[in-house]
Length: 145
Image 1 (cartoon, rainbow, N blue to C red):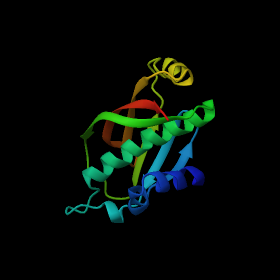
Image 2: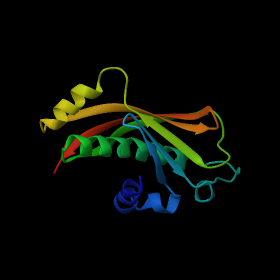
Image 3: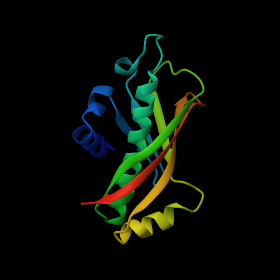
Image 4: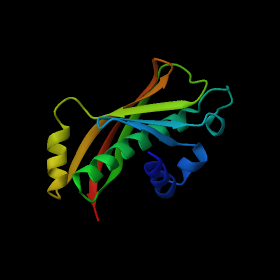
C-alpha cells in the first residue's frame, strides 16, 4: 500500500498535504485514510470538500490497482460525482471504495482491456466508527495514452 500512497502523492500532490494514505486492499475494496488536522473545518469536523476529494481519490486508486492487475495502461478521470453527508466526522477520515456488485465491472474491464472507451460508477463511503458519515457516487472514465 505504501507504493500506491507514493503514487497518489506524486500524481495528485494535494493528497500529500491532506495526509492521504492507502491502508487496505483486499482485491475488491480499497480503504484510504486522511489526517484530520489538515482537513478540519471551522466547526472542528472534517471539511466536506476534503471528504469529497478523498472519496474521488479512493475510486481513482481502486481503478488504478485493477488496471495494474489486468496489465492495462488505462488512466481514470472522474466525469461527474455527487456526495451526501449524513453525520460529522470528528477524527481521522476513512474512505472505503468497493467494486460494484451490479455486474458492471467485468464488462467495463473487458472494454478497457480491449482499448475501448469505458465508464463505470463507483460508490465510496466515509466511515465514522461503524457508521456511514457520507456517501459519494462517482462516474469514472478510462482513458488511454
